[in-house]
Image (cartoon, rainbow, N blue to C red; front, side, top):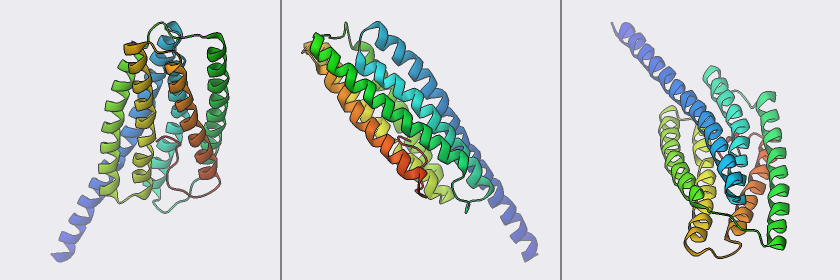
Length: 224
């Protein structure tokens, strides 16, 4: 009887674990699809409104999609073998993400210097305010969900992924502040200041991607 109870309890635990991994994988997929949508809206609206900060934010979202693919693969890997190490797919995704971030940094800095030299300012930054608020709300929800699942699975990798997502919140806050202040005051170069802030965090993310690709750090993303 005790053996039967233990077997049923083991089956129940295994079913719960499988559900949690499905939830973690679902959160990873949602992150990917969300970043695609955010990237499309942000780059289009940033281009239309001449907002370099919003446009750069959108490009960053597309780069996060590459990172998100690595995270989804990571979750699938640790579901099959929790003790397995980072594989070539994840390392390649990290390196591609890192290079993309560095290219973005160069583009943002050069564009910022050009806007300063020419005195160029956005037509409006209202969409930067809207998109940054939406991003903050979704990122906090994702952090909560990933943290909850990570704790239940006792997975350092998933918990690290949740912690990395806070960088996305910081970047959204930078966009919100620069866009909001410019919309209220129209002080020149506030959009450029926001852009350079995004460039700083993009550089950090790129550097961390290469550090993780060369080691066994738990988080497989620069922002996530």
